Image 1 (tube, helix red, strand yellow):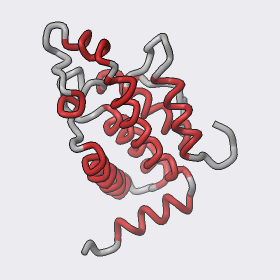
Image 2: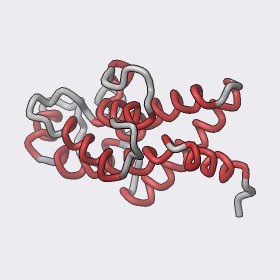
Image 3: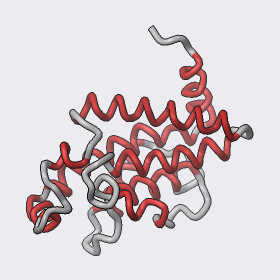
Length: 172
């Protein structure tokens, strides 16, 4: 990504280019992870290896949506880069991701892959049914777009600082 501000449109377009590429190289977790690594200016943004087994709710188990888990990896890396105290970096990363999960659940009804796609990917023929259904092109793409557009603004120091200060504010 360029040196200018990252916009919601930028990250969504980049996510769409990676995820919808005809080579089907990147799943939900990988796409979200590398797009946010790029937006955050993190090292080796095209290395998706840490997120490979997270697609389909971790190894197709139907657990946590890959868009959320990929975002969690990138936010953790960003927190570690910006906060010297490791314990504090973990706390901030956890709370930022918890907010993403709350917003994601409110928008999409669940944070679990199997609930979102309605298919058991590990069942015989499950992945094939998923691909044939087109759910990945529509529903999963919307979920990736949601995660990257929500978290990408954290690349700006001002937005990061504001988000961290909000974590300190008493909850009503």
